[in-house]
Length: 167
Image 1 (cartoon, rainbow, N blue to C red):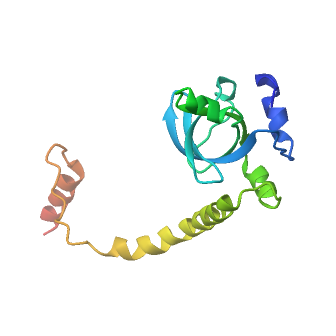
Image 2 (image 1 turned 180 degrees about the vertical axis):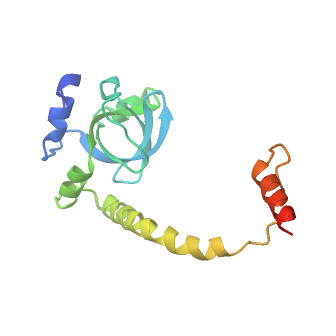
């Protein structure tokens, strides 16, 4: 992706993703700060990648996302003592990931992680509602809340005075 910042959205809207020479798909493991992310390749090797400044304020990534990384100079960078081994060339969106999973270019190690993540996302949406209902009925052996002495309650004063006058 050699286009500038103004062409980023147009380039990402294209559905077909083709990997060039030296490019590979990697999964984001952690955000390290200062445009540095930790990624894992298809062999399970972890390395640091640079998230270019042209992607700032245009694309946001989080743990578990997939990116296309240019790792052509990876071995030379590691031999020279640099900790950053590769550069992110494209961020893959959900639709692009689904299309790539069906192709042969998608690494086998990521097939299980993307399915588990999508299943976990659908299950997480239904489980908390079921689990929270029984927990809300129980007190869980917690002590009762103490009254807040810093706040006056004028409504209780009026309610007490009316009940005294009625009797």
